[in-house]
Each structure stands twice: as C-alpha cells, then as structure tokens.
Image (cartoon, rainbow, N blue to C red; front, side, top):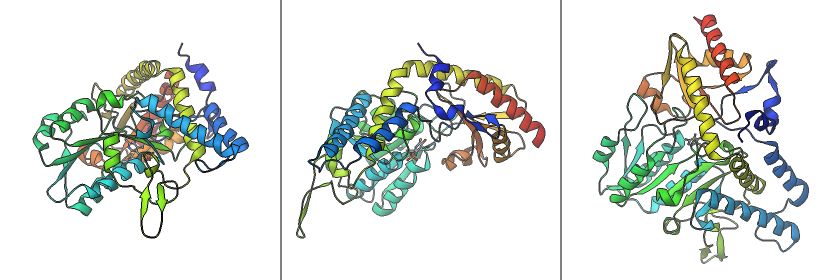
Length: 404
Ligand code: PMP
C-alpha cells in the first residue's frame, strides 16, 4: 500500500530545513534523493569489504566482485536484457552516450546521416555533433510542436537509407513529454538504422523493457533513480556491443597485453576499463530494488496525481505559462511568469526552502524554440506531497507580487 508519509521517512534529507523552512525538493529531474537504505549499502561496502574487483583471490575481493556482479544482474532483470553482459556499467548517461558515439567513429563515413530530436539534453546532442565532425556524417533533427511533442510526420521525411543512427530521449527532462519511442524504433529499423534511447529522465518513473522495445542501446543514470551520482548503465544488444571498439584502454578490459599486440576482454569487460565506482554500482542495484519494493505502477499513479494537481494549481496564477502541454507527460512542469526572469523566481523560492531549477536545463534548443531564456522547472518524485505543491504555488504567488 503506497503511503507517502512512510516513504518520506526513508529519506533523511527530507527532514532538513533550508533557510529556516522545511525543505521542499522539486529538483528531481536534476538528481533524485537517496534513501537511508542505499546510503547504508555504500557505508557497508567501505566499512566491511572495500576491495578491488575481478582480480583478487582473497575474500574481500571476491565479496566485492560478487556484489558488483549481483548488481549487474539486478539491472539486467530490471530492464529485461537478454544477457547480463549486455549491461555495461558506466559513470552515467553522459558516459554511456559518449561510449557509443565514440564507437561509431569506426562505422560511419561521409554521406551517412544521424537523427536526433529537437528536445534532447545536451549530452544527447554534443557527442553526435563531435561524431559528425570526425566522420563527415550529417546530423538531422526531428522537430517538435508547440505542445512539446515530436512531429513524427517529419521524422518519416528525414528517415532514409542514409540514416545509420537515431537518438531520442524517452522522456524530456525539460518538458516531461513521454516520446513514442516504440514507433520511433520500429521506423528506424525499417531502414536498418540503430536506435539509442536516453532513459535518464524516464527510469525514475517507469520500467523500460529493452527486449519488448527492440531498442539497440538504452542508457540511464543511477542518481535519478534513488542511487548515487557517478554511476550509470548502457544496455546494448550483443550484436552491437560486439561491433563497437572499446572506448577506453586500461586494466580490466584486456585479454592479453604485449608490446606487439593487445587483445580485448569479452563483454562486458571490454567496455569497463580501470577500477569502477564499485560502491556506487552496488548501491545502484540496491536503489533499483528499493524502487521496485515501492512499485513502479504505484509510483506512476501517484506522480500523475501530483502532476495533475500541480498543473491545475499553477495555471490558476495569472500570467503563468507552462511549456510542454502534451497529454503524454510525467512529473515535470516548466513554466514562466510574464515579465519576470526565471532566475529571480528560483532565488526567492529558495529563500522559502523550495528547491526548483531555473535556466535552460541542458536543453538550449528547446528554449530557442519557445524564444525564452529559460524556465522555472518543478520536477516531482514519489516522495513529494500535495502540501508541498501548495507551498510552491503560494511561493510563486509571493515571488510574483515581489518581482512585478
Ligand atoms: N539526458 C537526460 C534526459 C537527462 O535528464 C540527464 C540528466 N539530467 C542526462 C541526459 C545526463 O545525465 P548524467 O549527467 O547523469 O550523465
């Protein structure tokens, strides 16, 4: 049974005050909060079995290796990957995307095309631009409409035999739009193009089934899923991961090294050079288990209630505009007040203990599309409450009065 008051007790940070007021944390699209249980997993690692993985015969190293590999299994099961070695452990979404983009340098040539959407995070734009510069491939963009939805008829027009890769986020971190990724993947496959889905914003809210989606690559970050920062995952279909060259060279990723020739380890180690964030990976698994113990269905229902409530309340404020009004959206409200800079509103809200984000949210093309410098973004998680939304609405009204 979903009980938000009990859930809030799991998160020590939610008990603190900011500027003398109880913290209202609405910056979940930047990073989520961490339950005590996950913090304990990190402490337990350092207190009891801190050791390097995969190469020790001693007990500590084996315990650490077992816990690390158990986490890979948890992630595999959660995303329904066919094989554990199709899960590559990385430092986060950005690292995962760069790993794939770098690998495609060997597979693309001039004349090839890659497609991104108009509502990507910079981490899903810049690596592809660098890939285009390195290979001579051309970048095409699926445009969006005023509601903040991708225009799929336009996607049909730019897809062709030249398309080699398509990159779209599952849910936009700036607008909250849930993109129709299954359709996007299916259409790309008709032309033999591979698809990478950026799931950083989606994974705190839903469970992607990578086999059902038939997606080639899917990436996410632990810190948005109740886990620690600096850890993430790349799912890749075995056939693609085998085709891509290693991203970084170093220890752990080799089979044999000599000065004449080095051979690489099998999947997944080929992509995991060096000592990873061992405690972080183990905590990532614990965070996924924690979220599943609450249940993603219950999380979805509750967060949709919060979103509807907040949307209605905020729209009651004169001069407030919400960007991203698709019916298919979740947990993010980006808005502005007429004639007032978002940064000023964010600063005043902070004085009231309310954490929102202001600016372009690493998605500058979206701001250019709406012709605005940025937005105020309130993003919700399952541990937020309607009372906190009431505080936000009151805070925005006060800020409007003070800044008008
Ligand atoms: N893509 C999206 C949609 C995101 O929301 C984020 C994080 N805000 C990223 C990519 C980048 O994730 P990270 O900084 O953890 O690499």
